[in-house]
Length: 320
Image 1 (cartoon, rainbow, N blue to C red):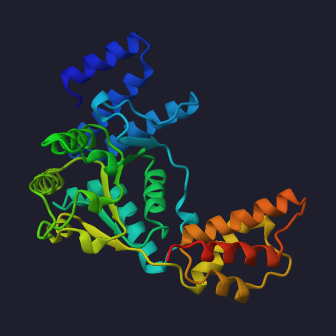
Image 2 (cartoon, one colour; image 1 turned 180 degrees about the horizontal axis):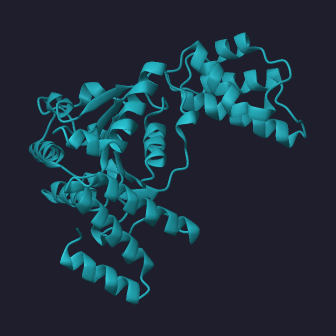
């Protein structure tokens, strides 16, 4: 049951026609119900808010405290699971996260919790951020990306204070919260070049993650898992590892992106060879470059030589 203050705030926001405030408080009520073990009710409330915003052409974007301005980027993803090209074992683990979230009431009735603190590790462009968007879309939750590079400041104590505010948001406003470049605040405390302030930030981060009992999904993503403090791994319910696409994945990705622009006689062996060593994101960009070139030349389909050229350009532009 909503608290007395929440009920009063709901009434005031409705009477003053403050829709955004009404939606925000409604989501806070949903979070409160989830914490009480009423996951089905919490899900229904979020669905009602979601439909109301969509019917009014609104976006599920929330107003954050002024102190966090520029630190959190919010979006309402529309990326379904079907577009995610990853190995089947990884897809099954992602589906397990979704299934456990949807069945959290059943798990709680047996004294168990669902996976909601996740660590994504792997090279750039291999699908970590895309997975966060997929999870948000499939669970009908907003995605809030924490700009970690802006979170760290030179002023003693300020970073930890902002971290506390962010975890307050995670508790009060259900959503998918993505900490990209997680190693910037989760670096190994034993490194020789570490400084006292960053050790305090890491200690605070460890405490906030461990104590969090919200209804939100928390995702840390890093390209450099070796830089993370080992204690962080124990704070996450699951660690998902991402790799560059293999031959099968490269073909599926190229087919998916090209769609109706696929060449009449595609040379999949040549495409796969040209794309070897590229990440999923780089292959996506190369395919879109080829599509744009076809459109600008009034061609209904991409030419084989055109796509090979775009893939080669992407490979040649890689650093190192």
